[in-house]
Image (tube, rainbow, N blue to C red; front, side, top):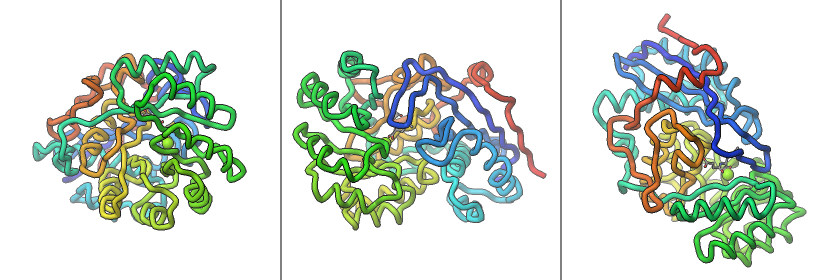
Length: 369
Ligand code: SMG
Ligand code: MG
């Protein structure tokens, strides 16, 4: 394909409720969207980076600049672009995986739309719907948390994930466990603990958790090995896993026995499939993480989560868990599942009225030289 134009849209979507993690609290989801036009076909990609560089070093404004200055010019100068070739085309830019993944998604979407193929078909989906969990932020108090969790259970979510940090862990977990009975439960620390907390974290074992996600800073694989050796709850890495090689290394060292796969964190959907394949060959279950995606990223994540190795419910919640209105047709929970879109590309359409309504900046428009 020849990429004729790339547009970058930055929008702010109000969240239905604030989302708090050990990094901080957000009331709006700022999102960078890439729209490519290739051989007359449109493709859309969503950037998972947040407003501030807390979950990772990437952030919305930084990704827009990296795409505008370094990645888009490479795409616009190439005569024949395929999603599979982007890894090579972008090799001169180190890191910036979320920025790269944004363009990969848009190119893949255009490519698939031009051949009438869905994301699910392209990635290797084996299911037509996926089991959904929900990630519950840190609450102002336990009663508010319990009310929120009960609401999600009533909506049909099949797994609850609680955000934890020092000072907000054993008690919320114990109280939620009481309320939800045997419903699958897991926790996510977003790097908030240190090795000094190992004895404390072991007390989570009594709650029969599916896993504990990313307790320590992402570079410290060795600390996760130590914890995994002394706790019964399976340790699952999120932030640490940025490539297939790192995933294999972390698994072989015993740092992670379950892997959270987020395409944006690893540079795109094709690398996400590669991590899935590697984990599957090592008998390590994976699940699809979430970054408060709009319908664009959600459609693609749901397709990914339908691959055979995705053995646990994902943070692939319904649109209504995040937004009163989505930028595409909304994803609606049915008996705890979301359906894998079947239309060409992502299978969803972007609402241009909302794109303008939520715009935070003028779109950046880049064309062939
Ligand atoms: O998309 O439902 C969602 C959010 C899931 O908890 C979630 N994501 O570390 O897994 C994670 C967090 C990262 C986003 S908050 C910075
Ligand atoms: Mg996480």
